[in-house]
Length: 445
Image 1 (tube, helix red, strand yellow):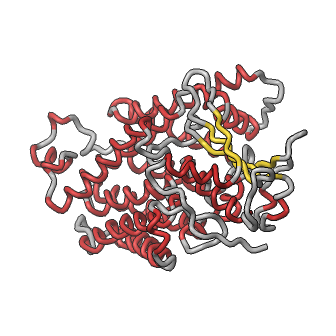
Image 2 (cartoon, helix red, strand yellow; image 1 turned 90 degrees about the vertical axis):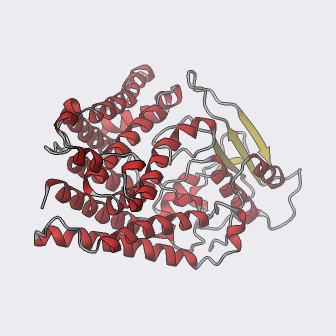
Image 3 (cartoon, one colour; image 1 turned 90 degrees about the horizontal axis):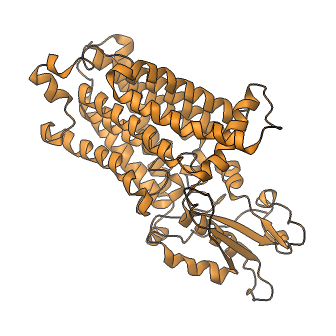
């Protein structure tokens, strides 16, 4: 088989294995559940039967497993260049993406960046011919690094999450940062987006691809150290995703004598086969090609508020607006027992306790909290409705919400607004185009 065919099959095998692994790790997220609030993308979706989640989850598992078999078996049997059951593979890629899109309709929390990446990756690798699929996959991965780097180029990252990552990294290798100044940690944090930006630029150009590949692998290893059990001890799904990235980059960016030769040395047929222009693609390839191009360009809209942070690859970015949920200390006992471990004690001279929604999400679903403010508002409304056992009065509000606006890019400062009582909080729904109304939730005591 040709180098491109083997490369394509290995990429599909890698995607299939890690898609199944991460779907299995976060399985609670994909099924009908009442462990954590579900916020549909549109309010009318709440009227649809929740059992559809089982169907979409089953389709995602079956299609990922099918593509894994269609890719792995020919490698083991050393089959020729002809792809087995090409039509079935194309159907699997389209079905995975379609099932994923439907599942997101039922819960915005499912817009996890790894699933979004895998859905588009399986579409590319199953629907496009090897030279075109590999070139487009390279461009897609480079765009992830590029957008991720730009999302961290602000004071908020340097002052908060960037410092935490630096502390986690040095802690993992046995170096204490307890006596380091915030300025020192801030300078170290500032190198993270710069390094990611250099990786993206290096992978784009043929002559710098090899050192950039080494740097990309080193970057993922450092991130795994920082967030792993020896560092910040984040959830295991992030570690699995970083292992996937390392293998993917090795398969995707290792030198390919045919694809990487200068354009002047290629025949017209080769140029046509590798072209990323929809006009040069076959009819069956045009729709997948256009969808991936849309996914590559859509993150440019994120600063305007018309595209979400995670699909725009704002990974470990901290500048976006966010919601802080507080409950009254007296109302804390009214919360279900399964939620109470995630409620902090009140600060001195304050009756308000912070609800650690991000920890609740990780504990119940094995997935990080979706960072969009409208989703977090929906979670706050859901908790407020849990507390609404009796009509709430202004004299004894049980819930408060702090709405923190996007941080200033240069200073990291935010405008913070307070909303007390469920009525005030629910009025914020009008700020958003997409839904913030949660499905009915009943937690066990």
